[in-house]
Amino acid sequence: MKLSDLLHKDFIIADLKNTAKEDVINELIDLFNNDGRVIDLKKVRDAVLDREKIMSTGVGKGFAIPHGKTNAVNEILAAFGKTENPIDYQALDSQPVHLVFLLVGKDNMVSTHIKLLSRISRMMNKDEFREKLIHAKSNDEIVELFKTEEQNYFDV
Image (cartoon, rainbow, N blue to C red; front, side, top):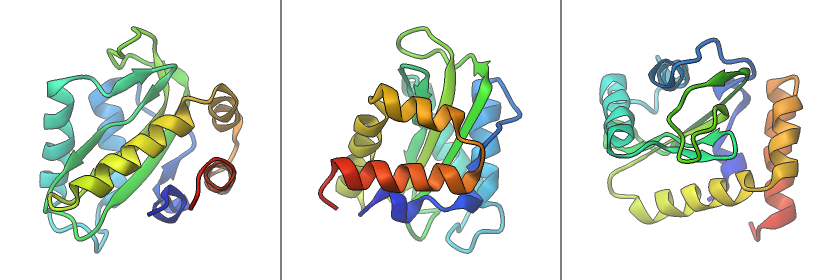
């Protein structure tokens, strides 16, 4: 499964409005309001926020990857947001976050969920890729950046 197949321009926020961690997560989850793939949005929100309570998903280098698993979705969901304003995310490196990739998986798709998290982490570990995302001006440009990056660095 490819990230570029999961991430659609309708599930991207090129300029996040919020600067608090939980508000940013909720802003991304709200993109799935009235989405037919979601059985129960509250359970999706609970799964992601409960996972966040275990340990911050602010992994460093200005990036966070909030995620959760729940059977309140019919398939894996992905959303992405970015902001020039620093988000106090309690990241592992204590630095503010500017890029947030949300991933919601199904309980019975643990292996796929872990592979996708790993792929996102490897892509976002590249300084050049993160810089391109930060400077992207539109949702379409962000989608194209993910597609190109994934094609260049992974067997897909």
